[in-house]
Image (cartoon, rainbow, N blue to C red; front, side):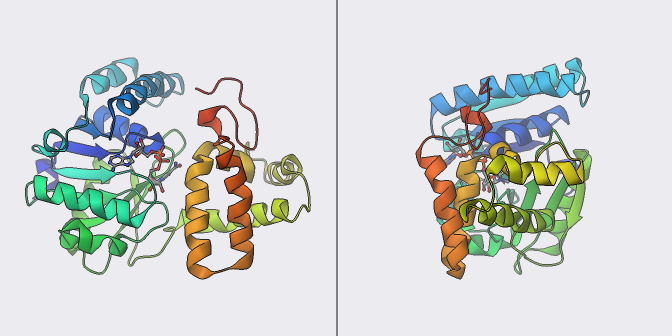
Amino acid sequence: MNVEDIRKILIVGAGTMGQQIGMLFAVNGYEVMIYDVSEDVLKKASDRIARLADRLVQIGKFSKDQTQKALERIQTTTDPENAARDTDLINESVPENPELKGNVFGMFHKLCKPETIFTTNTSSLLPSMFAGASGRPERLCALHFHDIMITDIVDVMPHPGTDSGVVDLVKEFAERNGQIPIVLNKEHSGYVFNNMLMGFLASALTLAQKGVAPIPEIDKAWTGVMHTPAGPFAIMDTIGLGTVAMVIEYWAQKTNDRQANANAEFIKEYVQAGKIGVKSGEGFYKYGDAA
Ligand SMILES: NC(=O)c1ccc[n+]([C@@H]2O[C@H](COP(=O)([O-])OP(=O)(O)OC[C@H]3O[C@@H](n4cnc5c(N)ncnc54)[C@H](O)[C@@H]3O)[C@@H](O)[C@H]2O)c1
């Protein structure tokens, strides 16, 4: 398979990231199918993608004409067979759980053609955790995005069983989508940027969990000195506290680190109260318009 042979993309999971990544591929001329588990989720995702298109025009990233044509290239489905048909590359953005990701890839392995490349957008897991379950470990690697509104940096990360040709192909594919790939030599949780970010967020959570300073003060200390618009808690609200909590809890349990477990409990209280960040209208802060 050459990069020109990649035409049709399947996005699995229509949440925060699936919406963004689907839009990005569509605006770059790819046919995009978005698969999720319910029509209700897909309807909400379609509405949010339309709003995302408007925002991308507003910030000058793409023209109105580009986003309009992109929207016409995006389809949605809850039917796995329909989703898998003619797909050349999958990018998966289901919740951060290795078993779930393995099950999803395993299902699509049975439905996709043998050449289809499988990529995961996991934030902190390792592809080798579900490479076996994917049914095609040699064609699986990570293609990991950040927020497409703020950066074009993506991570391309193989696991020990990934074919090196697949890594080159995924790198080239990312570049064709206007992205700047950071290609890792080997698996490492959190890639490059996220590895640094999670350390930063953990420090901020520890300060709040120990009651050292109120949350807005911790953010102010960071934004005031670094002259950046958002501090660690505002950043977590943007990522989504559900996703942050899952990442922190998973690694807290794996490492059995006492402070990490306390931080996981701290953030889970917000999630259990329905405060999951910008997308729900409230997280560590309140947002006037949940959209
Ligand atoms: N949010 C971020 O800033 C961010 C950034 C980079 C990577 N990621 C990673 O992307 C992945 C998704 O994160 P998100 O924030 O978009 O999550 P999200 O909760 O917003 O969306 C997840 C979506 O997956 C769907 N889903 C659940 N089970 C499914 C299944 N079996 N088949 C198909 N769809 C299913 C859900 O219905 C939901 O729409 C995670 O692995 C996360 O670590 C998140």
